[in-house]
Length: 504
Picture 1 (cartoon, rainbow, N blue to C red):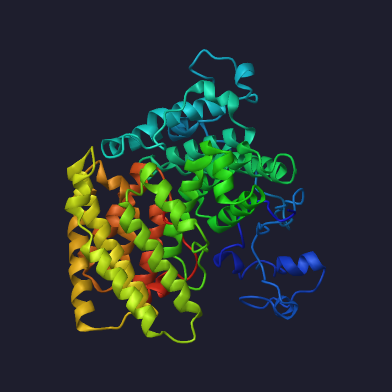
Picture 2: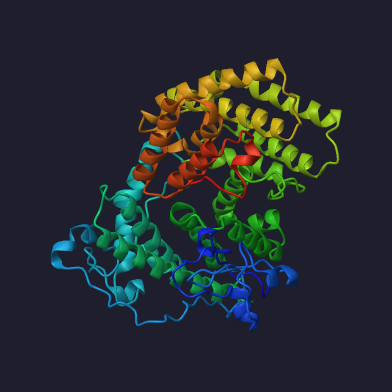
């Protein structure tokens, strides 16, 4: 278990490009091995010869999963003295006041000693912010899923039961939400200050979580799982890091506890955390390369999803259960096709049967079974039906599992037109627009040859979602789509060249 510390992966591509004007930097692997780097781009030849991934030439050492107690991230020593940091003046603090979730005195008359917080009341203020802002923003969804276990008001008394890691992550979530709710454009000084506080608390959380995972007694405690769950929520909301490390590390910890079913039998209170990870894995597979899928075909996995998913609708992913299971089946076919030497007739038949089931799904019948918000469920069911059908056709044609026939071209055009039209209606509703991230991403892939107006509409929807829900993820998705549109490429796998997970 020496490899379960949860940290982001390699640095970005742009971090590997060093400035032409400064001194040449050695790659971090050569620095670690005390070798003279050859400064090759995009990676040095010594790393290639050693069979390791070159971490590049960034200013900061890239983070990765390492053994417990060996987490490091240092900045290269500067050649000249650092510029003196200027503190914001009183006139510059207008925006900062909106963001000072940490460091303020608590408005509630509750002692810091009882709450077991540090010298600031950061966590108390963060929970107050969560309840009045983040939770309030999600409340419209309660019209459709009033019993969702994820729509929970957090009593201040609960802070006493949070681990230090969970408290720091809650502060991260609150600060990140506040950053994205600032008016545009905002004071640069305020944003710099806010992001520095977010990264400060994130660093504390990762350090505490690393220590817990490195401890044999603590690594399988429920508080540790709770910390991982909250960290993944925060990372997907604001940092867009390598979410796969968190998922894979969590699954290894669950295996230590006897597997998914045994874990849920022993800790039934954790089933909603497990369901969240499953939702992230399923939707993450749709926007990941076909050759780089999270295994979801293991024995009992689909049965577990079919059992849990209808009980605990996640507010931002209100996909009807039958369609959600079809998404899993499509991803299984993509995974199978990526390793097959050739596409046989049985694989094509399975894909055609899947598409037939998607097309015969009745949004009207499903909406009629819901006790609340039937009109909204009808709209949502129609949107997800078209989005899942397009995912099926587009991703499987990309791998030649489905043929390029006139019938499929007509079906694809019909679903595309329907999705574009229905999304406009959904984004105009305060209830349904919260659940539109994945359908907007699917529409964006299909908009590669659409008009400028359609692309602008999708872009506006993602930008509005980013502000309304206080998260970076929709903007990250928009940038992925813009890169795809500008590339001139057309296939599904060409849009998602690495694993993405568009889940808020």
